Image 1 (spheres, each protein chain N blue to C red):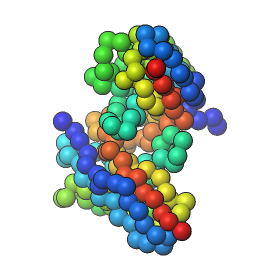
Image 2 (image 1 turned 30 degrees about the vertical axis):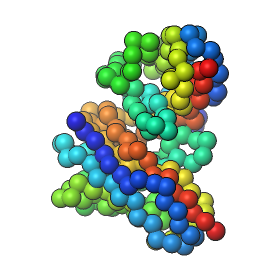
Image 3 (image 1 turned 180 degrees about the vertical axis):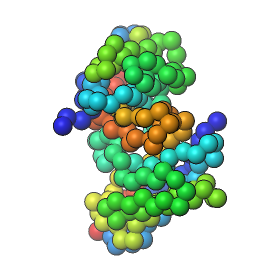
Length: 112
Length: 117
């Protein structure tokens, strides 16, 4: 079935460090790809998305590029801040958008 | 514009009791999703509706779980009888999905934290 694998956490970084969180998905059909973020005590919210191959989604300094050939959608940020501490979820969406599959989530801690 | 509204935010109950979680999706959205989040299993899709019709309930763990969407502005998730292993945070999410179109983002509520003693 459809699935997504993302980097296990927790990831601990110092402020201003470079962040990469890896994500790969099964290539059934042509999914849209999303990254969601969950801050403590809150629901998930959209961080960025890409809907076709080679698209780059970006928001709040975060970026991810839709790589169809490697079925990947890695999340990157050049300089993390303490306020980026949260759980990040990679989420491909299949079959006309009715079914979004979430990865296990990667918890990020950023130290001042 | 109000987001997805869930109630209650917290529920503590005893094993065997009935639990009803409620969700009001964003006005104009045509799809509604119920997810369960636990440390062990992460975020699991329980059921989703499109235009108030259940599309896929294969994620509902047992017959003890049931979900309804009587109209476009209200959905319930019921657990009867509840068990300690049902303890989790239950999220409702809504979106606008165009058939054959670009996938819309999911908008999540703040969740209902359920503790079954």
